[in-house]
Each structure stands twice: as structure tokens, then as C-alpha cells.
Length: 518
Image (tube, rainbow, N blue to C red; front, side, top):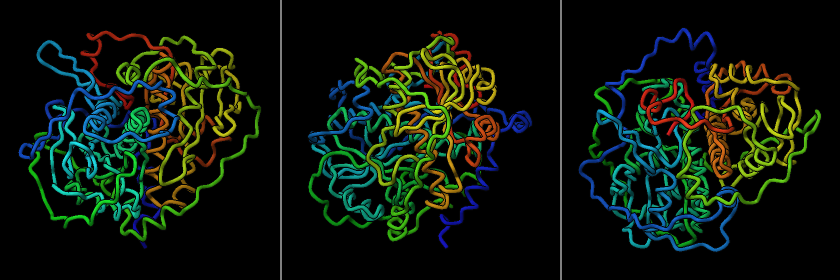
């Protein structure tokens, strides 16, 4: 039996990394600031291709970019690739503090502003860029070549998806475990997919705005992809592939993939190993192209029909009047909500555009959205379940639940001072039965993707958002009996922001318990 089909592995991981009031208070984990990982992965000896900084800016309305599709594909050249990388994973600004400290703000948010997601480019049909495998370096905005030659065919084989060989480039998202586990320990495995999902939200929206077809591919032979990218899966692993651009002719047979180990500057003086995370990654690996194909053919369950009082939502806005580029550059995780209300139309718009699915190798709808509504004009405060297909809320219980929502979010005020807090839940029993342990990856990835789109939808409409962590069992208990049998996956809070001064950022450069920053 493949390790992916041993469903107990993900259950063991999930149980071992649950947060509870008792476990959080009993933890003795502290942050060793002298050993904090460096923010960038640096290959000191690889050939460098500087990316052009005069690239096209995605001016499409942000909401249209989040949920729209490409009608006619533009050619993928180095300038468009640079734009896609910048608005997905680039450094958007720097803040220097007295004493020389620097905070790097990125296009997509990350738990604790740790930015463990790395981006690689497997190029074969990009005008102005030699065929090869490259690592994207956001610090100096450049590509570093790991391999010369067209390896798109190798990815197509690994993913059992020949379409990858016909696209001009495939972006591969990986994660460096230590950069996140430095703060979050073994629970960081969940964060890898929250953060890569959030980056995927930016990537897909930017690709649409740049007229570049793009989709997500979550099924592939891990060993082959990690080998091509020359990453050590004990420390860094491939999470997702994203072919981009219109058809560009099939790649030739790929060159032989020799084993390489280019030097990398250490992130820290020392690293702490978390076998629980490594095992979770290894136990969800797919081992052959045949297994990938069988895995991809699995069918997902149908959504649970509403049984309670239905609350219709206003028609969502088709546009927000704010371009995608401006939205991404304005984005920053909210550190304090004012408690003021947003409109029902604003919440409706954010939910609609965040849940329209997208092009991927597996169906969407793996997570369910539950909400606490605190201050939304036209919607009664209470607890709700959201039904994307009907775009309606199902009232579960009435009441002012600010205090309860804050408690559920690790007793962080952000969870209760928001206008609405969105909790992502999943039926892990069905998910693991359908997709094996890799289904756990999918649930966290989709939660991150929808959370990232909620970010974009909120900032497009000029209010704020932040991601939060949570007390696992307490979330389910609060939304039960409706949520019985599910598991808590992720949380995103929406609301009016209180502006935070640079001085406050310096005093508290990263959130205390898992919400996003950056």
C-alpha cells in the first residue's frame, strides 16, 4: 500500500498539532532571535539572469482578476514573467528601522511574515529567457539557473499531465520547513499550504490580469519534482505546480536529470528538525505516474444542503474600481480592527469572488466556510454557514459572538473586533478516504487559496483582512451540531483596519500566535 493511502498518518499529525487553551499555555517554546532564519534563499555560485523592472503592470480590476478567465492569451516573454513573479512573490517595499533592521513586505502574505514559500521556474518557451530550471530570488529580483535545457517534459511526466509540456513555463512552489518551524514548530506543515495557497491566489489573479492562462496542479510524483529542482525533501519540498501561458508547442524529450547539489548559504547558524512535519510530507507523497493518475480520478463528495434559515446575500459587485496591482501593493495584514461595520454588499462580494473555484487538476469545494458576523450592515449578528453555489448564508444561531470569536482565534482580539470572521472547516474522513493523506494538503491549500482571495477582495474594496490560527476543537464545538464531524483548517478575519504606526511595527515585528503579517 502506498504511504499516501495510510489515512491514519494525517490523522496522527492533525491530532498531534491541535491547539487548545491548555496546550498553548503549556508550551515552553520560545523564539531564538539570534537564530532566526534569513529571509531569502541564496545560491552564491549560480548564473544570474536579472529580471527586467520595466514590466507590464496588471491594471485589470482586482475583482475581475480574482474570478475571471483569460479570453485570448498573450505571449509569455521575460517582462510578463517578471510581472507575474513580482505580483506573486516579489518584495513590494522595504522598511528600515533605527539600528539597521529591515522588514521586507511581500506581494502575498505569510504566517508570521516568515515567507517560507520559494518559487522555481521551469522555462522552455519564454521569449528572452533560455530554456532551463531557475530559482526566483526576490531579494535582488533575479533568476538563478539550476539547470540548462528544456525540462517541461520531465514535469509533464511527473504530473502525468502532458499539457505541462506545451506551456511556455511551469512555476513550482516549494517550502523551506525551517523558515516556518523556527516559530511554529511541527504545526508549520499546515502553514506551508496556507501560505502557498495564498500565494497561488495572487499568482492566478496576476496571470489573468496579464492575459496568461494558468492553473494549479497538486498531483505529481514528489521525488521526481524535488529531484529536478535539486531540493532536499528533508528540508524543502515541492507543494504545487502552476503551468502558465498559452500553448507554445510541445517540449522535446527532456535531458537526463543529473543529480546536482548547488551550494546554498545556510539560513541560520543551526536548525531544529521536526520529524512530525517531515513524516507528514513524506506520507502524502505520490510515488508513480500511475498513482498520480489514479489519485486525480478520485471524485469529491457533494456539498451538504442547507437545512436552516437562509439569509440571501446582495448581488456581488462585478468590479471594485481598484486595479489588481494597486490592490496587491496596498495589501498588508491587518494588525488591529476598529470594530466598525462593512456593508452586506462588501461581504457578499468578497465571498463570491473568493469561492468561484478555478482551473486545477482536482475539484474545488474541499473546505466549508462558516462565519461569525459581528458588524455587517443588513445582516443580523450571529453564526452562519456559507453556501457558495446558492451564494447564501444559513443562519445557525443568532447573537453577538465577538467574545467567542476572539477566544476561538487563540484569544486574539482580531478575531472578535472584525466585521466578520471566516472559519474554514473540512470533513477529513471523506477527504482522506478520497485523496489519501494528500487530501490533507488539498484542504489546507484550498483554505489558503480562498483566504488569499478574501484578502484581495477585501483590499480591492478598501477594507482589511488577516489570517489567524485557532483552538481546533473549540471551533467545531462552537459551530456544532452543524459542524459535527468536521475539523478546523484555517481562519480569515475581515473588517475595517486601524492604521498601525511604523513605531508599533518595530515594537511588534511579527504577530504572536499565527496570524499573518507582511
